[in-house]
Length: 268
Image 1 (cartoon, helix red, strand yellow):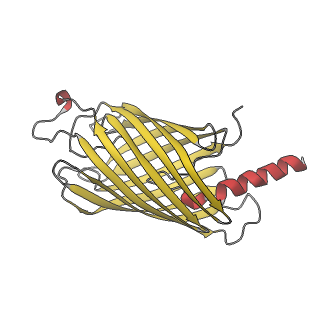
Image 2 (cartoon, rainbow, N blue to C red):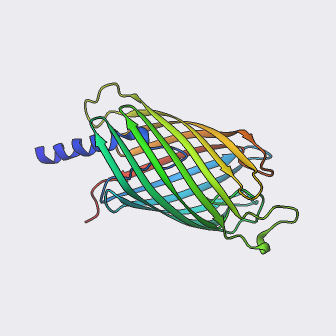
Image 3 (tube, rainbow, N blue to C red):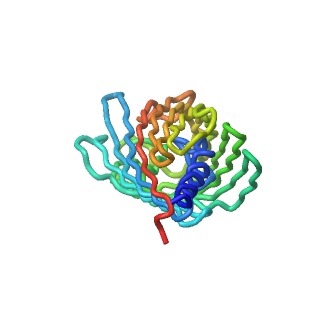
């Protein structure tokens, strides 16, 4: 029994010592623990011109310390009544780790492929519900004690066909994405046991540019996060546009609420 208690404490410290890397709107270069499974449900919503909501159920598998995969489904009432819109597969491979006491640097490559029934409303490419396409990119994350900083660069390509294009709306083609994220561990001040809740504060800058015409936008996305018993994660955030000239964006202001459950060392 003492052995299993010790293992539980070790898992706790491995997962929560870098909890400030669990960004709300982006992914870090670090992966979930090896041989683990996670499930989450995300709710995204807009208030203008009228309230609309999207639900994103998601399953995550950590095969080893370097490779993890996400599978997502999308359903929303953004085009009227609630319906299933599509799905997405996401894979991330960590190719660099430089670890020191209370700090580390990680780098990872990722790719996503998505499908969606939604018609074309804007030249922006959102592969989490709005567009069919693929994405690839790199992530760099630096942990410095209680502060974690991360940057992402990505290329997004749309699979949209003219059959889904609305009259007068631009056809999405390709977008360059970039983000800069920061996370700070506010609580606990000192770790005593794995039942202590973690409270994290995040500020993320999210942007995209259309390389064909130079139109772009930059959003600010503050968020808070609570982690309970090292296994349950609760996120709440809101993104809003700081600057941009990309016409037709519906998600200039969008809230995000999420709950996630993790099951460690369950895969053989």
